[in-house]
Amino acid sequence: MPFDVVCIAVIGKMNNPLYIKNCSSTYQDLKCHYIAHTSIDLVEERISTTKHTDQYLGLLYAMEELAVFGYITNTRVKFIIVTSLQDVAIKDQEMKNLFRKIHNSYVSLVSNPFYNPDSHKPIVSANFERAMAEVTAT
Amino acid sequence: MATAVLGQDERPLVAEASLDFLVVEMVDLMHRSPTDTEMDKEAAYFKLENLGYQLGMAMVERITKDRPRFLDNLDVVKFICKDFWIALFKKQIDNLKTNHRGVYVLTDNNFRWFSRMSGDGAGAEISRQAFAHLAFPCGLIRGALGNLGVTTVVIGEVSTIPQCTFQIKIAKP
Image (tube, rainbow over all chains, first blue to last red; front, side):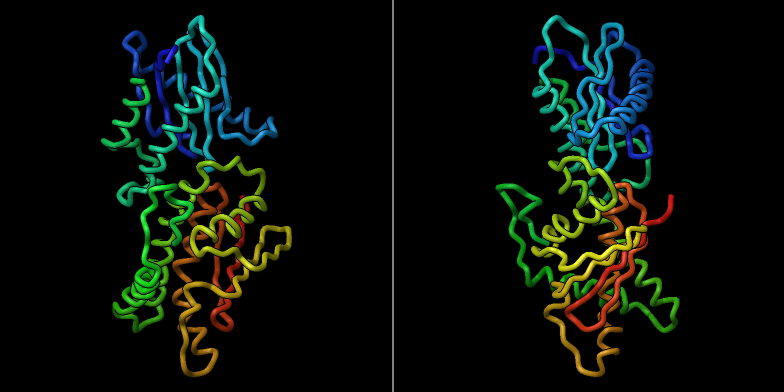
């Protein structure tokens, strides 16, 4: 992969934070929370203004040396990926594949009868954690 | 519940007969706990409805994975009639009526979980018995719609088995 994932965030349907992972050593955790919060507004704007119904929302915004990408499921769960800006262009297809992986592991998580999707609590799951590590490692 | 949509290629197979027995037994089990008073019956109904709700939530997450986003409520209800019902019962809802003000009536002329049921006695008595078996599918619909962002109340109705109707009322935001 020609780019580094800095942060992955999963935001629930009530805009509650479900999972925020900071994969970098250069940024503080707070920065990731801040970015995740900011992107909620942009996701909302994106889905209310565009007619196109793809779950992948593309580049939400770029800030300093970071680029933020968004994805929203049919069940209004948002996934955010933050990457560091580099000289090479990031291909949409690569991004989509990453989101797809996150989506797949989220679906597996929800299918677990011990997970209560109405609880709005942050995700605590070894399997999900492992899948996220895989996403960032590739 | 058909597995055709759930797993792609290495799909696990489900014995239909055992599944049907399980569903019937589940309803029976809930009602076997003392149901002397009207309140106990309601509690059993509520428990089954809640089970359906949980399952509906999880299932919809899975089957909408590769689907474009929904535009409006009618779109969502249509999805329930088609894709969701096919994933559950391998058939579509036969009739969908709406008053365009948030009430949808779904009619299934041959509801799968009723198709092998029969009873003696008056029609009204059979309908009353079959009604207990509607709690679970009502919950399924409510859970699916709920997870897609549509808060609803779902009421089932049986006139003559195997036909049944589901009335969906969308709660005003």
